[in-house]
Length: 476
Image 1 (cartoon, rainbow, N blue to C red):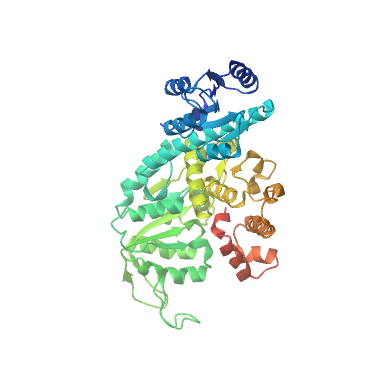
Image 2 (cartoon, helix red, strand yellow):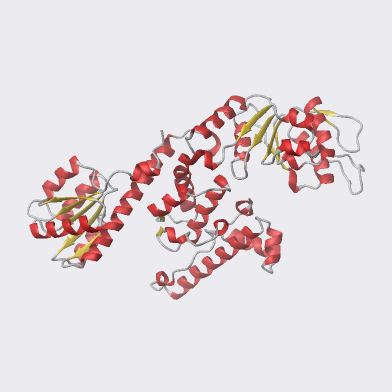
């Protein structure tokens, strides 16, 4: 069973203070116990600290450098060899720049020189606790991802998803017509591709038809083909998509939007396994496996006279219901980690992380757009973040539909960059923010988005390619 994010964070955090000065140990222990929600342990030498390390799972170690048996840098190395997720703070009263650099190179989180401000060391240790928690969450999620063997890119181990994947596996290598139903963003296209790739037709190219995108007269000719002279403008013969899919799979995406006149001809294909191109008297036998998908209520459309009942029964041989993200909440941490890894690599942001607070928020919020919405939010956070760790404040105070598309540039983070580099980063952040916003408003329609921002379609497409934005990511 998947450990939830709450389970991962449930154990009480442990901080170990290592110093050979009893007064320093007692002072830090009292400060941490008062200001941090954690279990504080102490050790008067490096060897005692190693024993504590063997007996307990530590989260943070705060250690002095100058100790008689094992100094802090040696202890740092041994802790890192034992567990790289433990965050280590080095403190010393005899600090040098070289010593600090060496400690950070060896993996220390921070280097503090005595005497230090108590509030400052509390902030540092609090950050360390968050860092360790995040590293261990990521470690557990990565282990889970590596054990998954779900087909065709599905990520998750929830009962709802497992049941759906089991049904896909059982019917994939058959010729049964399949109707895939589910809300927008639940992975209906992914399910269709899994059905094809797990079948004996996988060597042939799968043909996908986006039914709502084609007007009625074009849809009919695209599906069934036509002969030369069949209608005005038919200058040459055209092979229809059903013939192109002969021996393979044809996916009719959003079949609820097919006009009734085309539904009648589609019914014949399903019944007789043959098609008749426009302008021809003869028919052609086809060996096609039909997979249809919809996010609409077909039964309601039947009652309204907008969908043929006999076609529904022909399509509904096997129904695969794609679960909404609400039904598979335990998979959300896995999905977040998966998409975070994908987009960090794609956009060269390998050092970027999500804070534990934003992870908790993403795991508990509603997802009306399902997996697609989650994927898009993670993508935009990776694209637009100007800090090494994305914080909950990056999402707070924004409308749900646009919460990840309106980041605020923190100019103080840019002041250490050369002017031209800082200018380039600000321009990129503004451009991506602006484009995401206008594409979101127009549901991914590039033509309408271009008109809204006073650009030619080609100009907007060039900018989208430059910033690696896809219109499909903004469709609801």
